[in-house]
Image 1 (cartoon, one colour):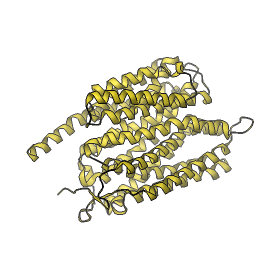
Image 2 (image 1 turned 90 degrees about the vertical axis):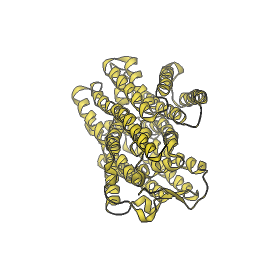
Image 3 (image 1 turned 180 degrees about the horizontal axis):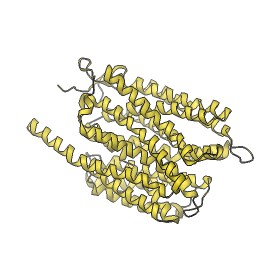
Image 4 (image 1 turned 135 degrees about the vertical axis):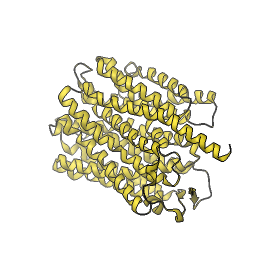
Length: 476
């Protein structure tokens, strides 16, 4: 017997205000997550760490996603789904408070100049974002029709990417320059004030969300989900692995960009300059997600899609240009990737699975180019990966939980658990970087994107058959 997801406590079907509110949260959460890419080279120099040791930043942060999601999954397996019991709004608020507490813990970590305490603070911060991943992503997918779920999630993820685009420039300025020691030396105290500011902003967002009336979605009480029912869906299991590979690949590439651009055979840049290029990597994801939100929207014509996508690409490119401290000639290469991204969307024909495979294939080629070439070509190749990462999280997420019905929250916790990839993959790449060098270590993300390519191809075939069977049973 299928469970209907019902809206309670509200009769309105206008979800504009809830979407805007949740989108603000996505922005802040993206900003703070991307700060890890600034912390890694900073703490590496501060504590004289190897690449492997510096990647413990990502290991602790994204490892928290696995621990938090595993706890959630076990609770939902033994008893009632926690989110279904307390509601999405309370779940989101709890996640924000936990993340804010993690930011506050940076103060004692910086004061005592302890790498272990920094890792502990990152773990708590990651636990808070775990709760947000489980609640906010599933919540956005419910705020409208299932057919447009990928489009909505791409839009909110676009503002998440806006946060990741600003973070390297603003966060890098705060830590490397504004709050650094007067003599320019590295000091742990430079992280104290920035993370207290982040905590305060998160608490303000929580206050705003607490005052906004959000529609509540839950399963009917008599059919509370228990057991391991979500594991019966093969596309969910494959989706969990694909999410592991995606987050691992994206985080590993972002974590190594500054170190990659420091290499003499690449660009020989220092942190102050390379952080601006890191913004381009994450800015590419923002462009792609805005384009994805339009391309995957089935309610508008192809002509309007083309017009809207061109306008969005131009507007976001100008925003990125105004943010980064680079000349137009230094970022003009990005226009080539925008055109290629635009073409790839139309080749994908607005199908989430097909588009996912195409983007993963392009990233495999870009990574190989970054490994085999030097100078600007290698740099452009690695930075171009961001724009093709754009739709991967939302598409993998929605494909993985598609058709789960009453097991949606349980399935969502499994997919979020797979964010463990962000903890494991960078560690392996760091190990290879210590042995073979940074450039050759990018072979690890190559395998990650190859797996995503296969998942997209699988879903194109598998979910197509599932839909045909469902239509046949319903008589359509």
